[in-house]
Image (cartoon, rainbow, N blue to C red):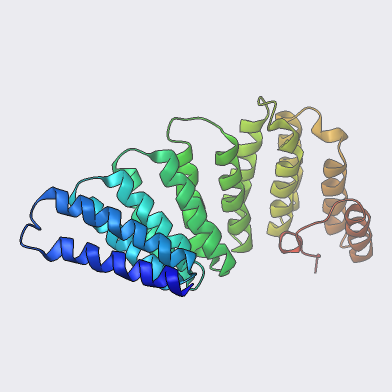
Length: 274
């Protein structure tokens, strides 16, 4: 480890000299410095000196920006973020935001989406649901830039719906779940998730507590997917709605337990009737 740190510091010093020598206005100096900073950062990374490695990757990124090598600059910010993530999620998020901005500017929308999603995951780990939802929503928009309903788009939209439900913004969650169910119906890779999306949408309807809306939703789901009325998910939602309508807490509890004996529920979607 000591050898890696010594090597890293030596390379960093050489890079700094390149920047501050009398010829620093020439692009070749920035190119040489960028490469030296990159090698330095990798040495500090091998030594598991994460903060130092991250700060040196940032210096490499700034050199690439001077050279207008935006793609390489963005990659260096990503490398920095992965180092900072070992010690500070805040630092990791800051660097990933820089990378997302650059990738978006140069039209690398898939790369920008990937790292927006990564930021969302970091905020989720911190239980910052508002920011997590915002970044998953942005990631979905970037993945869907060309109008494709890919698995990545669906995954991000699921997260947005989940966080909206956790924030008790049920109407927004319902719309997203129904939209991704519709998008998935004609996709052989995605269609098997449709009944799960409709289940989640129905649970959000139940949380709103409007029996008429729940009944209408079940009819809407049957129109959307002709097979849905034959599923366990449909029966579960219908039984829950009936229990709420009859104010039958015991039956509500029984129905939930029976369903959970096979399929685990996420409790923040399901509330017992008062």
